[in-house]
Length: 124
Image (tube, rainbow, N blue to C red; front, side):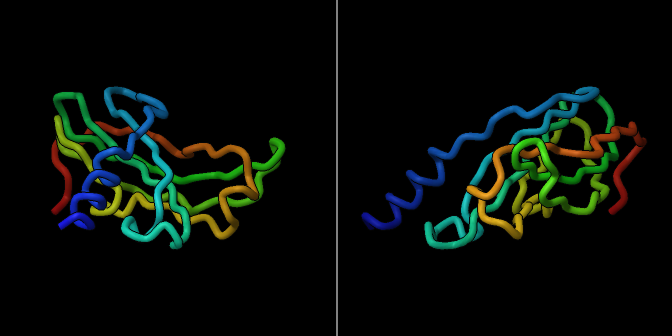
């Protein structure tokens, strides 16, 4: 029982930071562990997306990692779709970025792409 409460407390205390808002689409980031229940697992960057607009949107998203302003690693961009007034959770939508290098081997990251296109509906 204590272990379950401890895990729940850790999960609920995790905080996302607003990275950027583009055309009513908010991008939040948070560092976590690949296996949220294991502090020994690799660190990953989670990206949560919230659509505050009245229409669905398609967007591209990638990630670049920097050390001393130099690009050291990047992920390919992927396309996602979000319905109006909905949220995409990172682990369910695939927006979990696991760098090859350890987190202390770079000092900054940047979300790339972020090209937003309003669409009538998201494909199923």
